[in-house]
Length: 451
Ligand code: UD1
Ligand code: CA
Image (cartoon, rainbow, N blue to C red; front, side, top):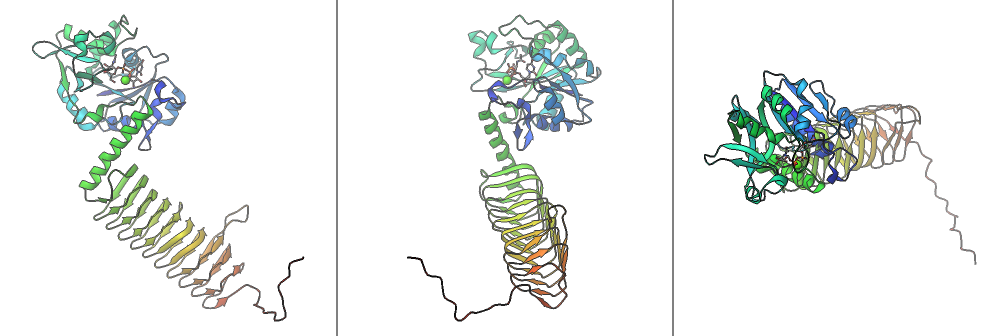
């Protein structure tokens, strides 16, 4: 099958400089949803008709399997499809999709292709409020005769509730012929793709129809209001899938997934969490309220409490993280690691059972097992030009308010006294302190206020 995706419209009602089809839904451009669904049908050709913001659209969607057809002026849907004609494989059927109708499902498209057989089929839907859409006109026997656009419809035709979603499957050779015959003598002065329906019927071709499994599949985006409504619909669908697969959600209306969320059994997710990229949650993982997780994997049994921000991190099993913890790219935590409030870890490995429970920065470090990192510990990893590594070996104890000036190593079992600024390696199993000795001046008095 050939797939043609119409994406040339500007989207005036979006009131935006970004071309309409690039506005994100679940973190992904609208048209990318359509492309991804179309790909599942293994099309022979996948052609995107672009116009407004052409260069941005093309550079955003770079991919080897997409061909491009420019529609410099938007003269109507028929004219748009005509721009792709030369790139279609004549032997196959052509499926026409819309770049601003993002939630169309594979199952519905397969049903439509089935319905078409060797002839054509259009995806229709019955709406309580059909206004604005093209209406499906059927004869007394129920066969489709033509489509009439709202602006060209008689009052009687406006009463028809079955509408054209715009999505259709057409034999390619016929499509090429009919598009060549289109005129624009209608209320909008446009070349209507929908006029090919009457041409097919004229030639004695039966025009079949199919219906989507759900109405939201065929809803288009023309405004930010509709975009927001479809986003909620999509998130609701994703939440429902998670619940049915055994994930416990505190509230299915308060979760946002902008990517893939993989999960084990007995996972719990509290309200307000946002997941981006690829996130994996192992068995019995709990995610507290208002966490942001992007490209993160969390192994079984780990508990994340409220307000954590994790990106590009690999977290071991049975950890205790947060509240208010930040893990940045390149973080790898072993089993049973504790990371508490206001601790930031970047590009560092922290091995099993180590703890950094309060207020610390660990960057470009390798931390062994059972290490205790006191409150206020900082790895000074950056000298203003280069980044350097800190190594903290197993069973070390880092006193509070310590600066580790990298490159530096804290030996196995070493203790650093609170307030130490470590500039040379600390030997194993010893106490290293770098601070002035404590003095008490017995005759000292507080200064007095000048009168
Ligand atoms: C079209 C259908 C209508 C259907 C409705 C469903 C026609 C004549 N009418 O109407 O029967 O009920 O969709 O939403 O087909 N586009 C281009 N180039 C153009 C014109 C449009 O790429 O020159 C793209 C738009 O970006 C959009 C899609 O085609 O993605 C539909 O265009 P739109 O103007 O919204 O069509 P409607 O008038 O709503
Ligand atoms: Ca429309």
